[in-house]
Amino acid sequence: MRIHSTSAKEGERGFSYVMLMVAIVVIGVAMSVAARQWKTMVQREQEADLLAKGIEIQNALALYSATKKAGRVMPGEVYPQTLAELTKQPKPFLRKVYLDPVGRAEWDLLRAPTGGIMGVRSKSRSQPIKQRAFPLVVRHFEGKPTYYDWVFQFPNPSMPTLVLPGALPPGSAPGQSAVPGGSGQATPLPPTNLTPPPVSPPPPTTS
Image: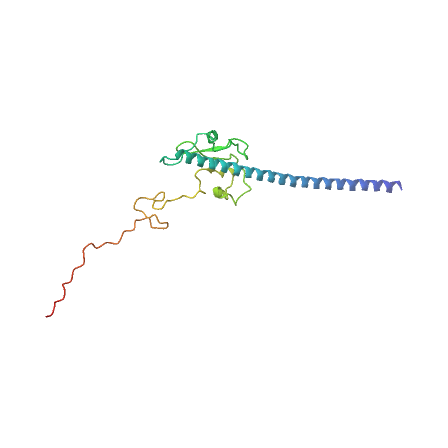
């Protein structure tokens, strides 16, 4: 009788141990899933913040250049030497100098060939979650593999190039066609005959 009671107690302890191990595994899996979901949620928030602040800086660069060029004929764009220059009074173009929300550090600055800052981007090489449905001003971000490839600059590939009526598009030479899809060569006008036609003599009169 005592042997049977001892075996039953050992069986109960073994069953309790198995149930405890199953509970630990289930809790571990649940915590792992929750951690991944939390990480994804934080990354999405950082992405949205990166887009908002990057587009704000991009717009500030465009306004800065337009203001500096107002009333003057100047080739190309005009850029600030620092981001802090965009926040100067009395007419700031940017509310404050932001940090990179993803990298949590200074931006990687894109310098123009003529000098000045023409754009910014994150230093992070992580893969973005967002791959499509970007705002129109940065729709060229679609399919970019890393945050480092999200360059907020002015001008950028998402901004259309406006050609005024009668003006030649960029890269065209005088004498070329400005009509899209044209051959690129000037279309000659048909020759104009400047010699007046011969005048026929009047018919003879009969008496």
